[in-house]
Length: 321
Image (cartoon, rainbow, N blue to C red; front, side, top):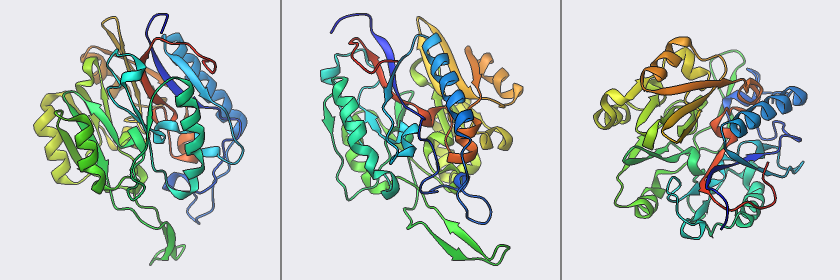
């Protein structure tokens, strides 16, 4: 490898972004109809996020678009990289491809191709287990966090309400995968955290580890069981910032952390409160906000959902943006 190591991420080209499966509560209106994307607005927002990352010194590799796979604008589901923060040669890291929900399963070959082109070894997960990548499994301080919930067949069911039905969405990662993931990161302990709000169907919509060594944590109490929250409080103590409902609903936790040369920033979705930004600054981290509201309001994803991390990488290959 040649060149300086730079933090590297994948983002998915938004040219064909639309709601295909309607697989989370943000993607449908109260009648269950899939929402319509303002693609011009979405593309402009995507480029602002990409430019913000590049201005911060992040190398952005772009996953080419596929009209049959509009969900590739959310590559955090693609998988996860072992030793993501370690400045090791890429041959010593492994990218584990996720087992996505059926409406997004067609994205897997695209992610495999571009990660292989970047030089990383590829591995797969037993297909018996649903597991959606670093959206549900990510480092936080000296731990890894594994978020999970019930896997449901997504469907409409009768309801005593108007309209007289509701859609069941469920969650995206099966807790049965825990022993396998624990073996990958041992001896680092893994905290298992159960999600309960379908609008926060991935852990990265309710939790964000940030700051040097990711030792600080944003968390949305209402998105998980009381036992899970107590576990976080025991481990993180004063390093845990509890999100207000208003900030959590803006997906404040769906943010991207970066520490370079002793300076830390946190890229958050636009609209989060000044109070939250002040709490972040008080901990020595600079908040930066970027409006990606079209991706949240129509697709149920924000800043972090639009990024999968490849860590510090030295090689430069085709596809860098």
